Structures are given as C-alpha cells and as structure tokens.
Amino acid sequence: MERARLIAELRAFAAAALVERDGACFLVDPGWGSRERAQWEALAARRPADWDGARGWLCIPTGGSSGEMKLARHDEFTLAAAVAGFCAHYGVGRVNALGLLPPWHVSGLMAWARCLFTGGVHKAWDWKRVEQGERPAPDKVGDWFLSLVPTQLARLSANPEAAAWLRTFRAVLIGGGPAWGELRARARAERLPLAFSYGMTETAALVAGQTPEEFLSGDDSSGRALAHASIALASDGRVGIEGDSLFRGYWPGTREASVWITDDLGELDASGRLRITGRADALIISGGEKVNPAEVEAVLREAGGAALIDVAVVGVPHPEWGAEVVALFCGDASLEPRLREGAARGLAPAKRPKRYLAFAPDRWPRDSRGKLNRSLLVELASGARGV
Image 1 (cartoon, rainbow, N blue to C red):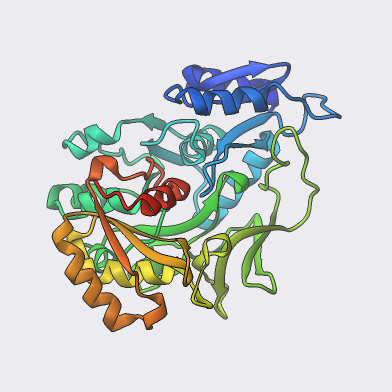
Image 2 (cartoon, rainbow, N blue to C red):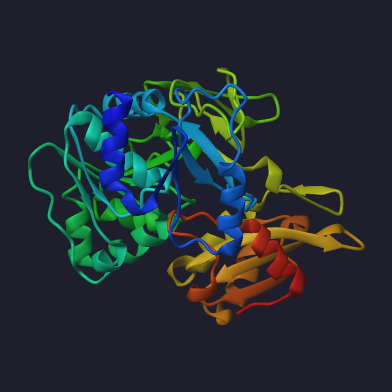
C-alpha cells in the first residue's frame, strides 16, 4: 500500500489520535495527563539525524513495564509484513475485525490495518457496550477476529450468552498477560475459539500465535512464529525476534536490521511453540535466591481461582534480604489466606511472598491492553498501601 493512501486512511480512522509533524505521524492518547504529554512533546520535537520522511515515519507510543515512554517507529512496510504473516498463519485472505482497542494501542491499530490491507471490514466498538450486552453479530462474509485480554475473557466466558457470541468468531486473540488455568479450562469446556499470542508494539503486534484448534487440543503455549518472523532464544533465555515487521528504532533513533533481543524470558519446544516464562528485568534477588515473579504469580492465580481478579509480584528493597517479595492482588482482602496456603504448597520458601496487599478493581494499575505499571506497583508495595 502506498504511503499517501495509508496516511489518508489513518487520518480517517484515528483523527483524534493522530499528530502530523514534518512528515512524521505520531499516534497519541487524547486522555494522557500532563506528565505523559510532556514526555511525548519532548520526544516528538526531536528528529533523526538522517530524517527524510520515508522509513519509520509512524510512531506508536509504548511504555513497556517501566513506565518510561518510547515511540516505536513503523511504516507501510513493517505493517504490511505483519499483516501478511497474520493472514498466512490463520489461513485467511480477507480479515474482518471487531475493534475494542483504540488506535494508539498497537493491537487496536493492527486490527484496523489487517482489515485495510486485505479489503476487510473493521468495526470499532466499545468494551463497556460489549460488557453490557451490546455485542455486534459478525456477518458471515469473510473471517472475523476479536482481541481480548484475560480479564475481559473471564467476564465474558462466565456468561452463556457472551460465550455463544465469542464462538461466532474465527479466532479470539488473547494477549496482554497470562491466563490462569481455571480460565483456560472453562474456555475449553465452552469450546471458545481462543488463540493465545505473543507480540508487542515493536513487532507490529503478533509474531507468534496459536490457532483455535491448537488451543482446544490442550496447547497452553503462545503458539508458533508467524510466517514473517523467526524466534530463537538467546544464551540467557531471552526471546530473540527477527522479521520484516520489526520496528525501525525508537524515535528519533534508528535500529539496524538484525535480531532484536527482548527482555522476555521464554522456552521453545521441539515443535517451535513459544512459552513466556517471565521478564529478565523483573527477576527478584531475595536472600541470594532468584525469584521469577511470573512463576509466583501463576501459583497465586491457581490458588485464588475465579475470585482473584488479578495479581502481580514485585521486589522491594529490604535491609536483610536485599529484596522482599511482595504480592499485590486485585480482589477482596479475604483472599489472602488462600493465597498464602497456595504459595506454601507450590513454592520454595524463598519464593513465597512475605507480604500481600489487596486492591479494589478501580485502583488496579492495568491498562486496557492488560499492561501493568510495575514501577507504580513497586512504589505502592514500598509504601505498603493497599486500597
């Protein structure tokens, strides 16, 4: 697709979220506060030394788990590669999508881009309306896709009418965080066409994904690499990605075309299925022992079951152990004994959280993509404030 047409279509789709400056297009969140807006202004004001307005002209905000804003540079070529890989992986020529995420989120942007590049239909919708029962029924022209995060899936799969609606999609793509075993089991019992996936802003969304058939057969991985990408593990276990959808660098910098090593820790089985086991930058060293927060979180999710809305494990400075393992959870404070019992059964003593803090859903710092603000969680754990 020509750049001029893509920009024109982007203006129509994301008018309130698009800022154009000197040949560059920036996607912004209209709801940003003064701090985020100031970060963005400082970045957008800069220009690459060799800027010609060609490669990497579309800048998408990302904060990762650190909370520090970055602008991942993409263009018509990286988006096209991601779309082509998606279509080949799922065996479709035309993509239709119900979009529940806004354009400044890469998942929202790419749901729209897949439809645009393949001549499909993109229907923007609102999560609150879905939750309240306003669920558009996909027509039978082409294949329809939907993207959800696990907490959204949990709310819908417990409702028989909503579960029947989910079964009308070719695939319901799940990302944004791990899903606990009970939720996966319920989804399989309901025969929901889920496809757990792996991707990020820097990869133009998916670079690995299941098919619904794989999920229903019992596969609990994030699936295999899509056709446009290859995935390998670095010597320290971090996930390395190579492919044509990789970003051009963080604005105003430029990334050379090569393997990009993420901060995600993973495992690959003999069939090439990827399983994410945690974050290299989130490891906690407590009393000389390495604690992987993802491992602890998985045990706590199993212990809490459906009553546990969400959980996160962080390390905070401690004068004796170096770092103290703290579990913050979204749910009723009465869950704490169940979580402690689960940790005692499933974890070595060094990995068991020493403190538990309960939070109400409206105070839980996870955004609509399912991304947690871990720097804020560490701050909250350090202050020992649950709400």
